[in-house]
Amino acid sequence: MTSLLNSQLEFDRDHIWHPYTSATEPLPTQLVTRAEGVCLTLDNNKTLIDGMASWWCAIHGYNHPTLNSAAESQIRDMSHVMFGGLTHTPAIELCKKLISITPNNLQHVFLADSGSISVEVAMKMAIQYWQASNASSKTKMLSLRGGYHGDTFAAMSVCDPETGMHHLFNNSVNKQVFTERPKARFDSKFDPSSLTKLEASFDENHKTLAAIILEPIVQGAGGMWFYHPEYLKRVRELCDHYNVLLIADEIATGFGRTGKMFACEWAEIEPDILCLGKALTGGYLSLAATLTTPKIAHGISQNGGVFMHGPTFMGNPLACAIADASVELLLSSPWETKLLHLEQKMTRLLRPAKDISSVVDVRVLGGIGVIEMSELISVPQAQAFFVEKGVWIRPFGKLIYIMPPYIINDQELSVLCSAMCEYAELIDARKSV
Image (tube, rainbow, N blue to C red; front, side, top):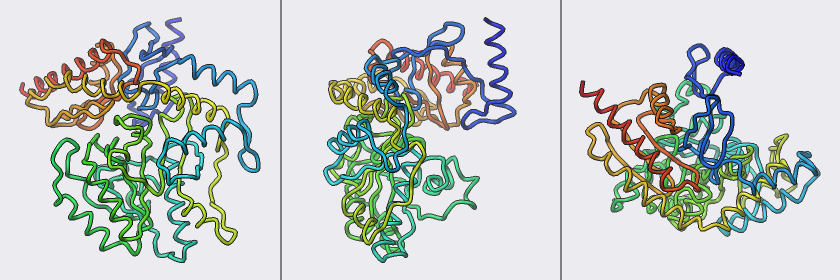
């Protein structure tokens, strides 16, 4: 068995290209044989408490009986049928549920394959709406520095072009309009002067802007930055004033992660287009959704117009059935109480990191805990350290962070946070040598 596992890892290293890594000098990988609850079991039977919820999607943990049952029941009927000209109950029930829990103005749902594709769909919706409205000059997107919206080409064009992951493609993607990252912290008094450059961007570019796209309240992969709800509220007002659509990318923040069902609720605003993904299926299958208003949907559809997008696996019945069960599982749980408890617990457990000289900031919101260091973190070294400590935490840039499954208990959370603080201390000790 050991030789077989070693052979599998060798093949993986030599032939399988993992995300954000080199083909010739790849990051080390761990061979997972089982996932249960909040734990990953490795080939050597070592268990790791997962602080990442598999890139933030496994909110109910792994191998959940309710989601397993939904998958097993649906697969006996059909795993997939095309969505062109056909429909099915799993998609209908899921879309009913999404319309019922999202802002009231969003009444039309377009089901997509993944988060990046939902962003592509949102951008196409915005542009096609203005074309149908005889405003064909409105083709550009306004985006925030520090933002991240996915790895496909249109999505890359609205990610931060300098500090983001996609600067290599700057000459290949459409040029968009960028404004500074929101300066106003979530947990500080709002400073109106932080709106100056945002307002100037709207004033200067509104005639060519189809939409502004942003991650409400939490900028995720662009830096785990939490900004003030008043900023988001002002964005909504500027969109209304300048006739620009608002796209809210809630792929990472949706379904309770920030302590609200959707992060837009912190500012009590309604976007024109909403992107959902990640936690939608509880981490079981890839599925995303783009919701929009009757104004946009009917505007695109006037005079026989059709929306020009149709993924092969759009509305996949198996994914929809699991997603419907996952959303219902969340709604039927005391998720608000749980997220508040997670926030309070992480705030207390990560507080000691504030006294470490190499730590720039410690911030917590809902089910997100972040330690920001003063220098870049070595991912191979960090992964090896965390695996040794019995946790799975994958830092990026200068950030050590966790976004664990909501079902995590206090003892498991304490182990995660202790490991984060300990690694921050280790970095500090190495720096001082």
